[in-house]
Image (tube, one colour):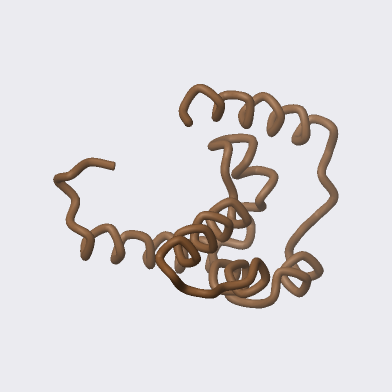
Amino acid sequence: MSEEISDAAAAAAFRRLVSHLQHRHDAENIDLMGLAGFCRNCLADWVLEATNEAGGNMTKEEARKAIHGLPSSEWKKKYQTEATPEKLQRMKESVAKNAVAD
């Protein structure tokens, strides 16, 4: 990340991103994965890792609830639809690009 972005600005932008994702349930995780190679669950995993690396104690479900705005099992029931073969293929191709970025 650019050193030009302060921690306060990064935190505010992160909170806005989470709020946006909690509002936009129509942007499903499979669609996000297919387009950008990450989704709400990825973001929750990053929060989990960062929290625990900083000495905190967070579970995977707590992290997902923080990002989804409700337990992930409930979110799936309310908003997740069946992934089509086309969406799965697009996700696979998109995620493959992550290896270069990491």
